[in-house]
Length: 384
Image 1 (cartoon, helix red, strand yellow):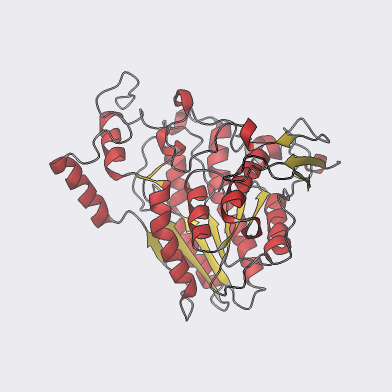
Image 2 (tube, helix red, strand yellow):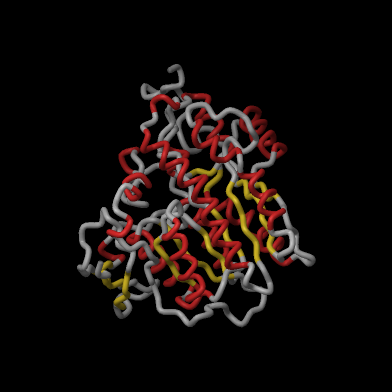
């Protein structure tokens, strides 16, 4: 299958004219993309504003169907594997190693980093002087975000790649991209995750929704952890892998999102297993628990749990930028420890902090209606 090319024409911050357009070769030819073998031009000024990393309510109250393409793994896997080429999208032609001379700089890979917490983490690492590889299933989203971040933080510290974490060939292509454009990886964060933007009893989920949740969260984490270990085992300095925890990681029930909780319940166990497997290598495998983050994923369930649910969201949830500004310095500090820490847990919303937030909400009325009005709504489904 022939590759397609496209032109990214980013507009510099503070400049009235766009920078010179560049043509890049893309071999991320998904079966559902119809414009194969064609060219297109993407200019930020012609698009809607970039997705806000802390946005919680999309227009019309619906999730952004375009980002991530919402292509299920089943649709991809049912196609003849030889009928498409799954590879990375080369967003910029970098030297083999994009790492600055500063020895404290980390080469960071974050899956699912074109919006929400993933994008916020990327920005926080960039603010700290690190290099970042942006990744997502959507070629368009990767192009938009890379252009945005390059305009703000410089082209020499950012690259991007299209990747579906649930497909082995796609993850392998991401690894090749990392080797070619970053020369390796110091920190790999398995952030890509999904709940199919749905909160309902298990029997109401469609098979394709369940496959998206399980293949993205569970298989995707396994695939990417495997790739990260393969890369880091060839580096004298090793590296650190972070598995993303979430609701269900503590083993408690996750009413109306059982599949999501099921996929998160095994993250701690997996981190310990992988840490044992690489005990002879300078590689750390850790868990990262961001707590309740105000993103589209959380917003999609705002009517599922009624007034009580909105009470807890308003009391406990924080914008993605607030979470990232707290956990990224902890991640960077962990990466600098000598001797290397093999298995750690970084958590934003600790039990003590959660209790403090709830008490302030009850006693002081703090954060009431912060994201959503807590009064009863006709769309509430908490009684069903």
